[in-house]
Length: 439
Image (cartoon, rainbow, N blue to C red; front, top):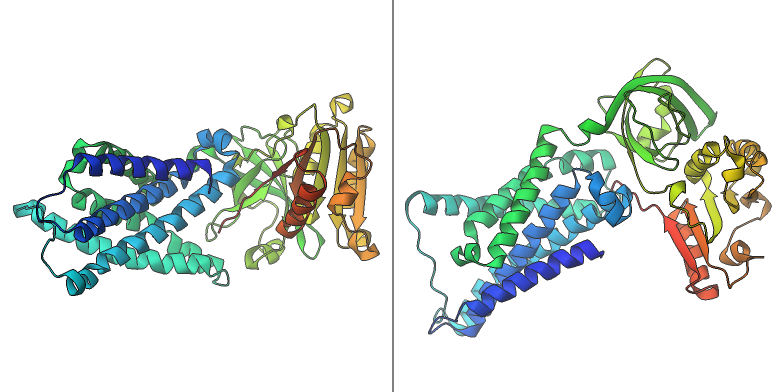
């Protein structure tokens, strides 16, 4: 769990604690009934707070890319905020259901007196309670589907689009059923702030305005399929404001399909032309070459991401590791250095491939690196038994010098390298990796 979510949880626990300490226990109230009530309030606060964070992060706020480390990590935080919100919602429901257990064990005596309302406010509170209950059941169902990785992405994404409406139902529930004294305490101020932020995110999502200001429309210039599982798409965009080597964008080829994130595999030349190398990883990308054509319109939103050559540490040894289609940001890096070869930082580029003889990227890498003497290319061909591990990556590198690894490829290889580096070279390596996942 990252710093942002930890800070949100800590802030709400502190605000809740201030309210508890400032509110004396009413006479005749049993401590267990009081404890149940406060636990229910705290779990509800944490659930709606984290759900508000998730809603706000869904708007893809670029101002959070720097503190969170890139849009990939913004999305990861969005996902974990939603999952934690769902878990706290389940806890909130379980505590509510503990009412019957307490009645049977200590009786009804000593219960907290209910706040008295009348008229429209009482009707609204009843409505808020019902809306919260139904929204909770739907949220739990979606949480289970999100954790069930075999559930198809397309229907899951369609269901996920209902989240803003469910959030607004739960926000209404939280605002109407929170204790009145909260609104005079830090807990109420925090809750109001988060409800406004979450409602803003939910509203933008329902109106379809997320990312609209960062969209550019253009046409596909060419579609090539160098191998059966790889499609190269070259586009020209009107109103494209440029990108930095290594960034990604959300691409929409078909209005019937949602936008998909792809790394931009070309440097920015100021002409609005961008290239994507798209690996066949699902139903949509597997049949992409047969569904799009030159001259077709395309919409691109971005750029996003912090996998940026400008962020290299000039004092650290540069080790770049790519595997398969993970080479795309490095292609953009190398292409951006072609105009000034002398400005290229000394670096080792390790490229891992399953079949070097039929790999379409190797020739391109060799051509680009040939013009950049400071970049040494190492190809690891699995078909010839050449596999990269931490020992091979560090071979010939003095352990006294700090190193920086930029990695793009399968998670399994990344984890193996991380584990090996942690054992062989602890504390001397900084590992950069994009963590972008749509689900």
